[in-house]
Length: 540
Image (tube, rainbow, N blue to C red; front, side):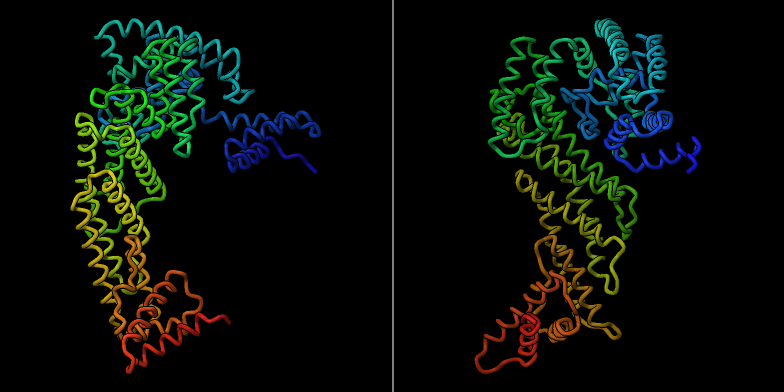
């Protein structure tokens, strides 16, 4: 058997590695390195190709080394950019990259070049993740940290130089967020608090920040169960107090801020705010951050709906076609907002007339868009879906998805105490429209088959089911066409799915009730239908 050429082997390795998740690629590399049976040259060649594949898309190695200084506190959360207010403790990966652009130009340009060259050389024979943990990389990172702290000390000492640095970073943030988020219309500028936070993280790398990062590891993203949340909140209060005694307020507060922003643990933070005795009206950094999260996620949801549904350029009557990725994004934002609602209420921020307006204003602004413009699209498309007599509209599934999302919003509004008449009226109007379409669907036209009629009714039922309403409630037992349709489906429909079976059972139950009303006269049609249903349900 002839060995493959290096080019063929490289292509084969690339093809295999492309199919694997990144975690398994590293496992593959470990397996290769432990191979003894194969020839050393071939093993080394395979190893080299895997390393090249892993490293080829991560070329900004010096920047990656520098930003790892903030790794414990970094997030990738464009929803918070929608807040329009300062979010204490927010340290975005984009902003760490913006700081790198500034410092590599003004603070340590030669060191940046040196670091890139050394890391490139080391990455020829090793995976970049391992390179960045090597003693050489650690020494380079420490030199960059010292130079960065010294440079920022000078920048922050003068308002003019600080403002210039913030303007430079803001331009970089705007450029990067445009690529990261398709729903963000205007990127907010970088604030002085963000720059001071990055300075504090680097300045305290050997002391307070390491202590905060170590304690942060002990907090899960979202503990389940009220008792566990209460236990973790107690632990957070104790850990924050211990850090405060040793390092002061500012450094200590980074722990609860990171539990909120990095871990996204809203339930624990709500209890922390309660237990730490913060006045909701006067607030502190943690309550301000929780408020920023709420406003940001609320605005991000409406911005995403506007972009996905193309509210500003939509042609009336056109189908909605959200991608699977866009649906997941909207569902994630909605779920996150529901969690935030619980946290805001649990923290007591809705009980104080000084803190409550921020949440009410954010919800009201979102409600105006969702309750009017988004609901109008859902009503139009649901009506067209219900009226489609012979085949489903192209966005049938998307319409059902949008109706579910609006129902969830209405439920959250009710729970939050901000339900408006808009969505109540929308629901009533839509159900009336669906009922009218059921009546039209039960009027059989020439050339239509009974199976087509049932398919149409089931499509309407899929939409009405979002609101907990089955079409069987809208079909009278006195309908001759109802008995014809059900008799046909029971005799010739084969194996009926669960929803159709449920509808038939409910209609047959209504027929039994109708028949039972009279002792002396029985409808032959209804009696035949009942007997047919009993035979169909009987074990064979």
